[in-house]
Amino acid sequence: MEPSTPSSPAWAGHPKGSTDYRRLLAALFCAGVATFAQLYSLQGVLPQIAAHFHIGAADAALTVSLATVGLAVAVIPWSVVADRVGRVRAISVSVIAATALGLLVPLAPTYPLLLTGRFLEGMALGGVPAVAIAYLTEEIERRHSARAAGIYVAGTTIGGLLGRVVAGPIAETVHWRLGVFTVAVLCALAAVGFITLAPRPHGFVPVRADGPDSRLAHRLATHLRSPRQLALFAQAFLLMGGFVALYNFLGFRLTAAPFDLPASVVSLVFFAYLAGTWASSRAGAEASRFGRKPVLLLSITVMAVGVALTLSSNLAIILGGLVTATIGFFGAHAVASGWTGAQAGTGKAQASSLYNLAYYSGSSALGWFGGVAFDAQGWPAVAFTVLSLTVVAGVIAAVVLPHNDSRRPQLGQMNGTSCKSGHNRVDSPNATRSAPAGRIGYS
Image (cartoon, rainbow, N blue to C red):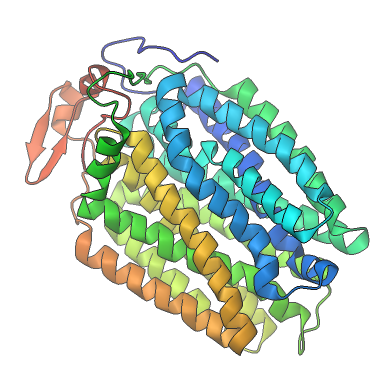
């Protein structure tokens, strides 16, 4: 699909409930499935991979971490591509390339080749998270952007769940390679869904190669100089790292004594992701009502409580803690990712990419470090590591992020003029037309 210039100088985005609004969210839902199902499908079969290649838990987790490393290093280049060719085209190329690699990765005969394939697969997948929030905020009315971001994140949880629960049972009954390959086939279908459903963009303005906002370093530096953006990036790094460590190594705990659960049963714990699906959309809605900061802090607290519950020796309490931590994490991620886009002025795609760089760097580094902790001291070391990360994230959010996040549409937005209130500035939708994509305003 070709990128389009704005169809109206006053383009304000698709209204909630319109056909294109629903098509856009459905398309991003499909993109989320195509991305996150194959990104995390190996997380559901880590014990089988460890046994197959005769490696430890931390080494097995590298099959997840290397994919997220690849994604992390690719998100900024993907954002540059999207600024030139358009959001829809960039996402389409990303999901097609990733699906092709996803069909090949399970065939890797050796552990080093498996890691290499996963790294390349992650790089291809980077186009979706790098661009999705920018695409969403350009095409949907600003007052509904927090809710829409929550719905998009909810869709990514379905993808993550699908990859894990499909691969796990097949891995136990047949082979882990067939389980991962099956997920890749499902992702191919989801990629077709995105390409079919994505509506023609109206809010995208290409960044000219010789334009005033063409300098990538300038756009990145703008966000890296913002304490608020840095605080949001810290949420991504710390909370995602802790969350991935939680899911990476809980399976090892539950398949060992005293629980000794079969792998097919352990794979069912990933249904806790459904709680994250609900939490993502709920957090987006509550952030629109009460403000982003209170909802973010509450979500971090809920995540910490859930992690603490997993220290129990009672299986029911452990699973309840996992569900609780999942609710907290996805609530926080929905708020923080949407806030990053709303906070951005120039270079919205780069703001989203930096958030995702932090997000997947945390997944890679801290997700792997959880394995080091587990191999050394078992589950308590993993749980205390994750608790420490949530505490640091909460302190940063409480100290740095503003209480007034301009969560409600302001008079200037409604009248098509610019208004100022305190330290916050909210630009009218008209301002987006004379600027590169993403200049929706500051909050």
